[in-house]
Length: 455
Image (cartoon, rainbow, N blue to C red):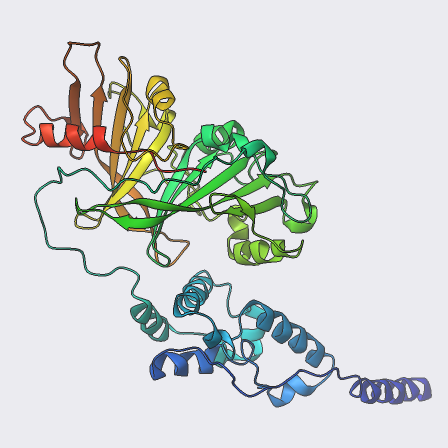
């Protein structure tokens, strides 16, 4: 019994000594608080400021070591990623971008941290408060008034600076992650209409990624699967459609569980602008990538739902986007096997379209020229414009992705003096429409679409 007593006394003494080992949690007044309506700030103060602000807001039990050490680590880490006390110093667009990401993290259950909520239930954000944030962000403005099907040519892509970038000489990211100049030849994984930052995106995959997506072998993705996510600024056109405008960036993910063990099995990189400048200022840039993708670790850290007919599991229906892949085998061609030339969104119809081309069409469409005139397609070239209705991206608030196919339109270029062929397949079964009253307008639109500009 005496030994037990001594141990108890020693434990109490050690516990008391440990209370003195208390590194500081810096506390500062609000210097540039986020610019938002009072009701939005109140929600953030209630649910987020305990970790994501410069104020020191600890409960009495947070003061007790060793719990204090864990809470301190969470707070300092949270402030590095997002600090609402200083966010107001950034442009309003950057402030809203931070809120979009925050809403996404809450939707996916990644924030607040489950271990934090266990002792701080007030940090949990309910659906009503979440809806207030969504209504404030309002990623989708009301669509324009209905109009007849567009016949006007879309706006020309901005001409990139000359000479064009030598893709083989693009420098790597700090830390050594290399640029892959072959990405322009990769095929489509999916596409995204981003209302949170007014961009259009094509997500392409190399052969390994495409094969994995079509077979459903993506949990995890196989070694050497690579993605390229290409982003353009949205550019409204006189035709009422939203086209890709200025090239913003291309991002890469490269799967190698051994080589990138410390970064969740993936290599990450981003190159911005027509000069393809590496995004990171030092090797720590990768923490931004891994932190953002943590909420989808159950999907091997990939936000994108691949357009694929591979069946998902009953427990995880949103593994691939089977609705968007529902193109019947009876179509004269399967455009999802081709390369993409450009894309656009019709905000009136809540639809998104991608123009694909066969080998002859792709050879004629040079997206690196940034030419203001559409390509001159040779005989034998076939174009396919696939249009989907849109749905909200289940992984990212403020984004829309393809849902069910609405139509597939084919244009086949004939030999000189022969008529160009236009065929349209539409409806729930994508049956051929032989009575289209706007065939001439649609033919003109498809042939007038310039390739989305690439560096």
